[in-house]
Length: 221
Image 1 (tube, rainbow, N blue to C red):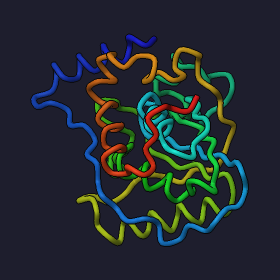
Image 2: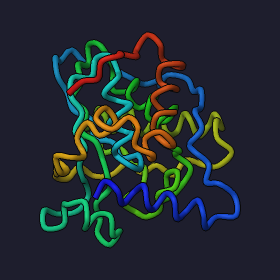
Image 3: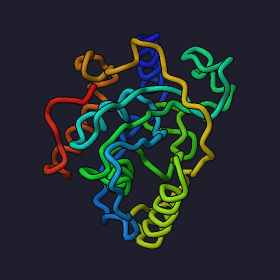
Image 4: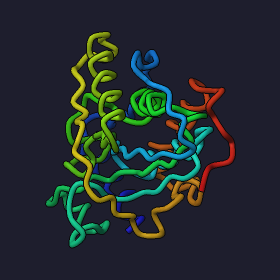
């Protein structure tokens, strides 16, 4: 349920000795390997914790035409929010991004992902959310995307932009299962939700601040 994450947030904040820290935006360079793609449409699947914020950020990127929240890594029998939230299957909360690679490259999407969406140094955790379903992962659709992702992680690790090593995994592509309808466009439809205001709205603000030429005020569907 949508209320579940807000209740979890409250419990974590009360139980912790110090407040859980939000992911910090990090200025990083563009990928050194990011070949041109002349197709008019392509897909990217990324997992970066709660899909509400991941979807919310990428829906505001110019060149992105659609973003869907869903699950990746498990099978059809447990591809639903309640089962995935239990953390007992292999699914991760993920988003499938449809984009025009002539306007925004795959490497640029990864740069946004690492800069403002997810902390790549925390294993099975993003913000207040803990469990393998909240892992950060890149799911390349083809060999070119895999090359870009692998090279970029190596580039960022070598640059020591974080105090800890990157643990974001590159996973084998499996079926992407679209999440329940109420999860779609959740940030746009629920801007005053406590979780959105505390954890996800800052990510969108960082996108606008750090990537002003890529920020689009009206979100993609």
